[in-house]
Image 1 (cartoon, rainbow, N blue to C red):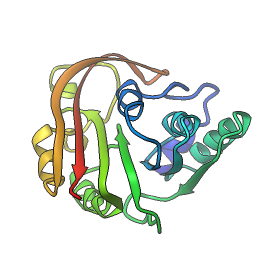
Image 2: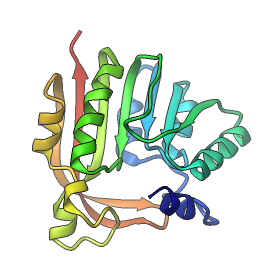
Image 3: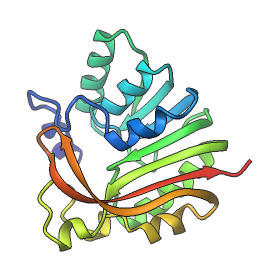
Length: 200
């Protein structure tokens, strides 16, 4: 899997574009900047946007090439991002975060459940979780805009509610959206959107 992502992130253009995810941008534009964690962040489009808005950014991915591309772009923009190469379950941080954003951060269900539990621990009391990911309808209804080809890796809203039941749900929806994110996220898509807050 690491080899797959290193190869994808070795292409000339950013695989998922250089602009931030639209759902993510809308949410953090409403929040006071603080510390944010971006797991499985790829080439850093969301991390770079958050840093430009004065957030203190930590990010990680298991692709070394993704880290290189992110930090190169950040340096050109004179932005600082703390980027670690790690898989989901090995990542650790001494920080607690005001926000965590999972954007198309797809994992097999057995790994995902453990990972989501870890993320709850990383959130500060009052911290915000932002999630957007492909829904199983992305496969079953034949959407061609990207995503894993195994439904076990996709997000139903009920699964997110269960995984993050310790948090207070702010938003939960399963909906069609239009993606324009580089070469690999293009066109109509079916997604789950989820926002929750850790209790104070």
